[in-house]
Image 1 (cartoon, rainbow, N blue to C red):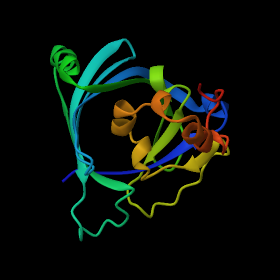
Image 2 (image 1 turned 120 degrees about the horizontal axis):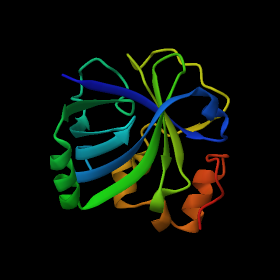
Image 3 (image 1 turned 30 degrees about the vertical axis):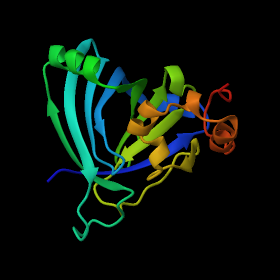
Length: 186
């Protein structure tokens, strides 16, 4: 059983740029997002001069599996698919988002930083995949508020209800903690 253990943080400055070791443009379409934490996603990545695609199922982990915090750990099953199939599936997805993903050379896990585009700009989120929920983690100074487990900030939720549809008060609350390197939206 594949388990994704991830912590997510808002980003408060551009100091992360010194750690970039790769980047890609991502389009993600959500074929299913049921409100119970189950999603079926198609992802198309164009980076390093090569297009790649995956189909991913994510779901809450069964209770009692011994891995701890459900906000940090979820089941994840991901399979490579042909790029043409991904393009066709993206046309079927009722909800989609776009972002530029940067791989970062930081210790303590696999770090990626997403700069959201379109209706979710100027949101910038950094994620680190860990080997266990209690893995020690040293956060860079440019990491802001932790958003692990905040359902409204999951990629599936942002595809359905992007920041541009949030009220001014909701956006202000999110960005009040110096969350993003960009200006407040709208």
